[in-house]
Image (cartoon, rainbow, N blue to C red):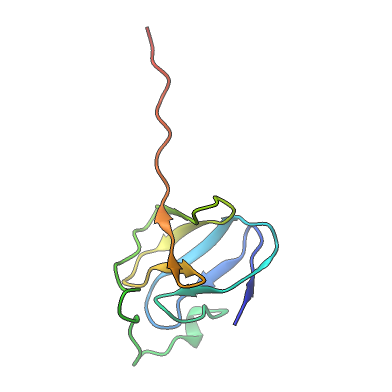
Length: 104
């Protein structure tokens, strides 16, 4: 299933407590998963008996930004959990911090 991502879109994992918000997106449909399952519209729709799929269970950290390889999608983790976001089955990576300018 595909999800239309645009900035401000809230995403809830269907299989764990992970929650994200889209910070950067182009408004395109993407095959996004969190914990190996399609995201749901609200936390109430979670399946309490489910768990993240193997390989998609590395854990998402609150406050970290997750990006795809092309830097076209950026998700901010608003609630941590065991599920990791992925697009087209490729896990998103934590965005590197920009180095501060040197003060001489």
